[in-house]
Length: 180
Image 1 (tube, rainbow, N blue to C red):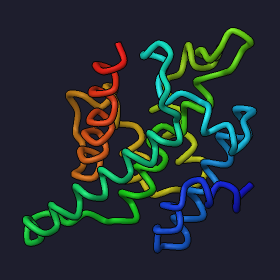
Image 2 (cartoon, helix red, strand yellow):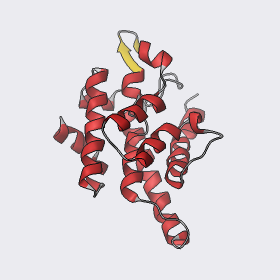
Image 3 (cartoon, one colour):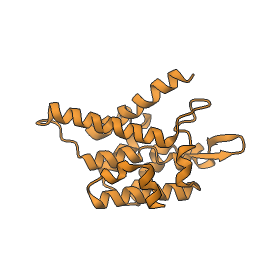
């Protein structure tokens, strides 16, 4: 399963810290296994249930959010390098895992995708952060996952968390408005 996941999400290989990379992969595999999914399902699982007939997969969304977050960090590093330091491995891990809890929040039925019983009481920022804790990922990665969605509004966000939060909504809002 690990090799298949690395092919689907090549950004995992860009995490230079081996410990963070392996724990990120383990958390993702745990979510797939616990949710009853296969790696191939990532191409079919919608990234959101808030858009009816959503054609964008969780895989595409995860990779797009990661790409936008990395590009933003690169731009900030160029302009604010004396003031703002972003740990690229932490950012990558958090961006890749930001929606991993959706593998527990969603289920597929003959009628299509819907919230699972678990997902009705536990949103993905909480379950995703729990997976990160379970697999020993750094506090900063846990923070990115926990605060990337509206659950983090009004509270403290690290610079990396703010980047992933905005990258996520930059990928959600235009699609939501286009696909209404």
